[in-house]
Image 1 (cartoon, rainbow, N blue to C red):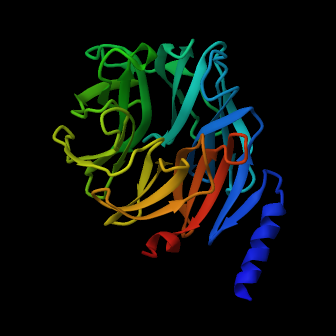
Image 2: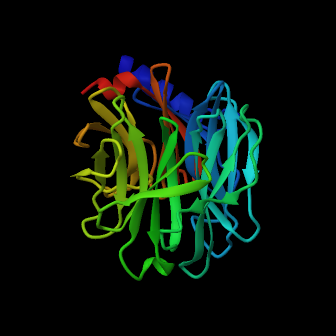
Length: 345
């Protein structure tokens, strides 16, 4: 009888359409469609700042193309349910991608994006850009190019995410070449105190064309970097180092990454969000130990062109914003996952 009730409840919720979109139930997880207004809606982030929650994502014609019409929308909410647009970043003739949010020491938010020109299956240019909110999070400055340490030879450059610790922001800038050809990609660990000027700490000694990377810190100040790799065995990498973050240890993962993000669930475990490459590609959550060994995998309702989860922990739930094309059109979704699901191993 309980199974029949659960099935009926699931079917009822699948047929509902909230103001923002359809609501789904998978086990004890609730998934809501947040946005699908553009032809292609993708690469989101989720961030909590003061009394608001913020979502960013890219709107465009396609995943990538000669249109170069990618724009980044910033929305906010007080309850993670009702969302309002507070900014739309756009640069005529330039594709803007993957906005990531972080809180600066002075109370403002930093927005980091990549902006470039794509033509015939390759980037002609690609640069990191930044914007700053006011302290209330109501308004944002126009995008401007980040200033990169002149000691770094410029290529096609992308600071994928900045994380702040003890008044310093750290990020990995990955460097590729036109058409994704021409040599090994590089991953430069950078630091900043103002969000605009970035100094090189070191070039990370990681092979396999390292690229998208997320940095987090544990309570002792130890740095963890989750790194996507796109050549050789293509398996992800977890790097760790103590201050001053120049001597790293590396743990290879047993799966590929795509849009990698992670949080500390507690002192002994991480929750990683990423693309999961199986027979059917999907977005998944990985409960791991501090070395990245998976204890449990939770597959979110998703398929195909998907991933890039933004995550926060709030009110005993892991809230995950991600994008997926499993309903035919790439759309932005929000999953509410009780922490008990992650702790039940």
